[in-house]
Length: 167
Image 1 (cartoon, rainbow, N blue to C red):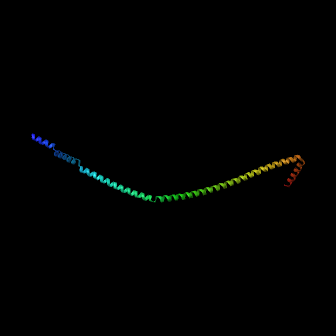
Image 2 (cartoon, rainbow, N blue to C red):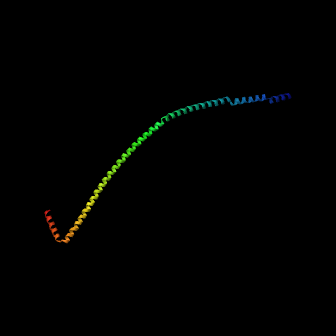
Image 3 (cartoon, rainbow, N blue to C red):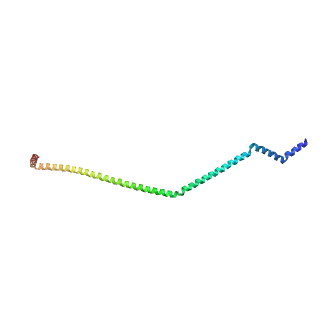
């Protein structure tokens, strides 16, 4: 039995035995973990990721190409739109000036009418005041004449009576 123990110690202490035990452990783990399926799943996921990245790259290239085509004539479009805006602004400006001139002419015409009407009103008022002043002055003068010369009073009464007969 001693020999058997020595043999056993020799086997356990040998590197070959340890290597075989390690391989058996890896074989058991490999069967349990099913490493081949896991590696295949990882490989398929990597392939899908690469395909998706290629598709996204192609989409990005298409978008870039579309964007480059869109901005290719951007300067011309901007110039054309600026010209159109300038023409529109000139037209609107011209129309505003014309409308303003028409409004100014209308206001001037209305002012002339108001001034003419006020002149007529003032003239009429002045004529009326002048007439009243003239009548008042004439009355005063007649009264003064009658007071200084009482004979004229009789003469005026006689003339008035004669004028009444004629009517």
